[in-house]
Structures are given as structure tokens and as C-alpha cells.
Length: 360
Image: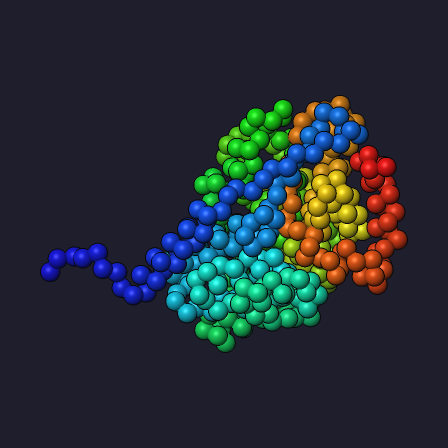
């Protein structure tokens, strides 16, 4: 009996699914790297990797593609598999996008405080939302929902760092350094990112070491997140009773994908500072950015100030994680800021940042 090239039906479906994801990738251009120069920081060049231009609208598009490929190649996702994810919003939007691409049911388990714009985006892609009261509940509830539907819990918080090829293959790190090659300071002094799963900081930190770049990785962490405490104390068991108010970053527990040893520096960012920096950067770029981008920008400004005081020149690269259009009813809404006790502090910090950045 001679071997044939005929594959069993299950393998045929997986092969077709991977091909669809790769075809989608080939249709997508790389994201832009946007320069910004601020007169107050002469000799320090800022760059923003605009991840909001991905088809599903955020940095999490890269992660979701990797997670789906990881699940398919590991034999965890098959035709008809219900995919379940624990998410504060953006990952769920991106995974819903890929689930629709493959014709798979998708359920997002997320805090009930997730912005309505993200909920609507998930539903637009055919996904369903299952809400929990506290961010720490998403893990157990996701496992239960997956079991009840005979599905697969994607578990971004565990698999983010291992699903991504950190040595290159056009990951975000390789893309940044390729786009920087003709700039005045092509090797960034700092790369600034937030941490939700920790996958992005792990990818960047490993890549700069592997390629022997002198760049340092700074992770900015919002209030009520424990990544900063873990990094300072080397205690992976630290927990918080609250959830981060900056959607997409910050966690009440240390996630398995957060690799503290590849992080060179961390900055704790007050929530009011994140919102103020978000609004300030939106004015500087003439487009609205999201809250986690504000966190990034505030951290980048602190590092730039340190470089200025030390008379150092160089570049700082950070990310536009998603569009501010997703937060019209929350972060950009003064009534929401006032209700949550932020409005006065945000306005005061906005005035300070306007002076620092030259907006006034």
C-alpha cells in the first residue's frame, strides 16, 4: 500500500485554519512608527509604535494571532471548538476577530467594568461576553465555561510569552529595530511598555539580549497592579484585592507570562497621570489614544527627564496600544472621571504636562 498525500479530515481543517491566519497576516501591513520631538527634551527623540492600526484595533492582534496558531499547532483547537478567553477587553476583541475568521464560537470572560465600546466590538465579530464582578474571577470562570462548552480556554496570561517567537520572525521587537535603523539614535535608550500578560515585555527583553542591543526595557505599571511589587520584592505570590482601572494593563496577581528578570526598570504610574498623559498625547498627535498609551507616555516622559538631567541624548520607543475611540464613555468623559474621583487630579496633571510638553 503506497502512502498518499491525503490528510484526515481533522488535519485538513487545521491546515486550512492556519492558512487562513497566514493569509490574513499577508494582507496586513506593518504598523507605523510615529516620531515626536518635544522642545523641552532636546536630544531625546520619542517614537510611538502604532499598534491601533491592526485589523482588530490593538496591540493584542499580534498576541491573538500567536495564541491561535499555538493552539492549532498543539492540537487544542479543532473544527467547531468553542474558544474561551479571560480578558479585560482588547485581547477578547482580537480573539473574536480570529474566531470569526475560522468560523469558531467565541466567549470572552471579562470584568463587568469593561468599556461598552469593547463589548460591542466583541459582539460585532460574533463573540459572546460573560461578565464577572472581580478581575480575579476570570481564570476559574473561564475554565468552567470552557468545560461546560467542551471548548478550549486560550489562557493568554499563561501562554503569551511562550506563544510568541521572541527571536524574531517579524515580532514587534524585530519590527521596531528595523524601522529605527535610519534614525539619529537607531538603538533606543529605552523601550517603554505596560504589562497585562507580560508577553510584550518578555518578547522585547529577550530579543534585545539575543541581538545584543544596549536598549533597556522599562515596564510601566498602573495602580492596583502587582507587577511592580513583584519586580521590587521578587515575590511572584503577591496579590491585590482590586483590579486595574487602566484596561489592558495591570493585574491583581502576577501572571505566568510576566518575566521579571528581563525587565530593567519599572515605574508605578498613578491612574490620574495615565488619563492626563493620554489626553496630552492625543493633542500632540492630533488623534485620540487609549489609557494604557497614556501610561506609556507618562513613563517615557519620566525617563526623558532623567536623560535630560544627565545630559544624555538618545531615543525612547513606546507603544500606542489602542485607539481612544474605545473609551469615549469612560476615560474621555468628564462625568465618568468625576464619578470615579479623578477629574480634579487629571486636570491638574494635564496643566503640568502641557507646560512640560510645550502645549502652553
